[in-house]
Amino acid sequence: MIFQQQLRIPGPTPLPERVVRAMDRPLVDHRGPEFKAVMDEIVPGLKKVFGTESDMLLLTCSGTGGLESAVANLVSPGEAVIVALCGNFGERFVSLNKAYGAEVIALEAEWGRPVEPSDLAEVLRAHPEVKLVFLTHNETSTGLTNNLQQLARVVRESGDRVLVVDGVSSVGSMPAEMDAWGIDVLISGSQKGWMAPPGLAFMAVGPRAWEQQSQARSPRFYFDWAKLRDEIAKGATPYTPAVGVAFGVQEGLRMLFEEGLDQVYRRHRVIADACAAGLEAAGFELFAADGYRSATVTSALPPDGLDVSALRSLLRQKYGVVIAGGQGKMTGKMVRVGHLGAVSVGDLIQVLWAIEQALEELDIKPADGRTLAAAGESLAREATPALA
Image (cartoon, rainbow, N blue to C red; front, side, top):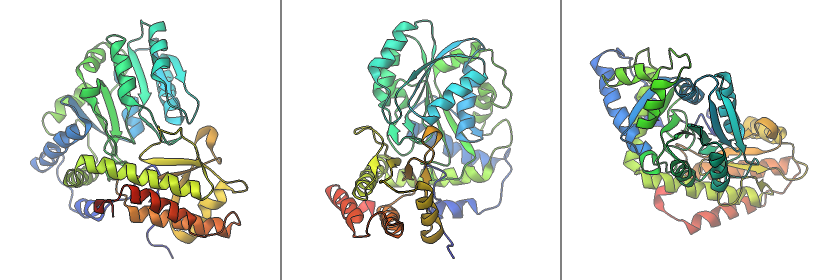
């Protein structure tokens, strides 16, 4: 019987023992001084990781709730918006905007390819009247990371527009500098690199976004950013928050700062590169374009003859390893290995070893050690004790 899974999907992510212990305490009054003390630590900590001095808002919902809150606060019915997308979560931004009555101008890159700054610049020039631009930093459906710094620069150079970024699976695991890069809204969620359970969305909101919010006409109640800002300034939230999740985020932030953000980002990059090397050696074809592969999830097409569902089922049932399949039009056509948050080299080695064993059992490739050898060679090039 398997008592603990090796959870390697792009989120939710495994909880470190420290986070579990931090959450294993009695609840406190969410209007009292104890919870205010938690908020007084969380909010500045989040700002530091987001790289911002702007307002930090917390909502009890998933990351998608955070994305919807941005649409609800910024978009007016009938307003034209630009959505730059290259995968399933970019398509979600399209759907959210349409649900609120926006006229969506979609700039769509081929799945597995990044949004090109030149293409975005062309769309912006063609639509000077558009004030709102939405894009995804790290597209987990394809394992691709857009060059957010370059894309943000293109938006800033195009005029006084509001840039809204889905950073749900990137912030906390890879660099994302909101203020320095000129981002107006940056969104993340507790179940990703923050090493906490699902339940809290984080939205950093800058001055241009607040100006847009004051004019937008979409209906909103629970998602009203103005109410959130007023209460968070007091160390509270307007409605009952996920107190236990906040305990976890508090401890997760402490762990990030103890490790050091630069080292956190390096750890994710090194493990991602080793994962890619191992999967290639096992006969998989990496899906995301070279140079844009995510530090938090690796996507790959299976070797000839491999049934992705059969592989995932065997890994789960026999080895306790849980990896993700494809989403949207890639359902059943790829595997996605998550490596964000609480992840170490040892975790990756366990996953790759299990994949190699499973491939042999499924008569795809012999378990001859080539997968681990390739990962080991990649790790050796970036050797550091802190990754153990």
